[in-house]
Length: 214
Image (tube, rainbow, N blue to C red; front, side, top):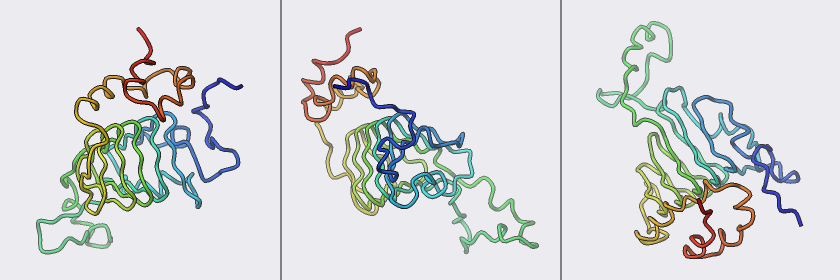
């Protein structure tokens, strides 16, 4: 039996499924950071994730995605470059159209932003979800299919809808604290390999039992 952990550096973890890519070896932008084993699934072109799924990313805000995240087809991260002025009668960005309108480009500078978009570890994004600029999504969260995430999501929260609302949390507060303390996503890959069944189907008590000892 093969006891080696999965390789986090390969682009296609399933050679016969080109629709699935690991994001860490794929992304090249200095404004995008992705942890090991986080993947994106798309039957059309998953390798275009940086341009098709991270939109209006003109900087300096960053997109940070943790480890072991599962991103379903069509997930979109809207970055702050999509922002328009809303303090005047029109929201149309006249200066970007060129001509003499470009002389007023100062009207587009200094637009308010919410900072980096940050996704924790072990987050599951359903099909066709959208994340708005500056949102922070906690560890272990689940984003339901079709959700439009406009506000922060707590650790182990389940959100759905447009705009997304918290349906419930996967665990109670004490158990969430235990899980965050364990931070299994930071365990050595070899240790995770030996305990995959516990990670996927065990209890928090089981997880505490197998935690690496200092």
